[in-house]
Image (cartoon, rainbow, N blue to C red; front, side, top):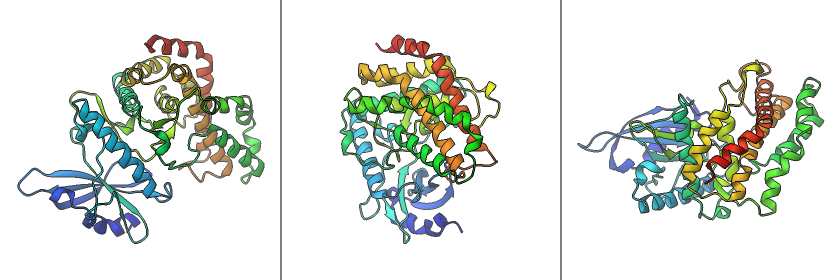
Length: 371
């Protein structure tokens, strides 16, 4: 029996699920971090209701009370903003269900933290953008997320994963991995290390702009992949941003940039043939249009100027993380074959090179939509 199943019944007993009788709970979704279950309930003679029950990964998140405080604060704020605009908070933001004793999560005997959200029906969650329109729909949702939270005091949030998008820190960890060379792999990656060394100054661009007050601290999602937006099944609109575990203080350009890194290309993340790895300016255009439409003027002129940097730095940072893990023995990112993390690193660096070659075009796209 897996650890989550061991405590599943106790977790189910800790919540009242809107007064409905629990008639089933099954593993759900494709996430690799938390243990997720779909809970089916029968509230009397009313239609069956579903809920999402999760056991938060203790390995990834060491302070669940801080993580849940962030989520409760942000979702409560979003609910008020959505209601004030005439929207439906029960569909347009996640809702935290409290335990029977009024807490935001239940702690099992081993300290595992469980939380519950109502299932948002008639939505789909995509692992890849099947059309440019769906990519744009996710962009609008993440831009709208920025707009609604523009006045939320970001400095009141906990940093659930310290230095998560600290590119300077990621660079320092790479240098430490090179110095240790525990796997004897440094000799294999001279080209990749030279690539990073040529861009060492770039790793400080965004953080220096933050330190100088050019870029504001924002509430950021920090994992802006397509599968973290629920798409309305009927309209095709991105209506709800999910997976708020990494909501922290950060830079809006990083949220924008991580989506570009993930979505503005057509290759697998571990593609060996780098000729197939290409930054797609047309998808960058589509995403930028949707993101800025959703943000609706919430970003400053400086943030708009730095959006291309967000794309480049998130891609460079991700490549650095893959390279670091490869040198350290592939202990962080799950691998299924020898050299997979090195291939992942190389795809990211190829995308960085492509962005550099199309830099003026990227800035022109931003200028096209900045008004």
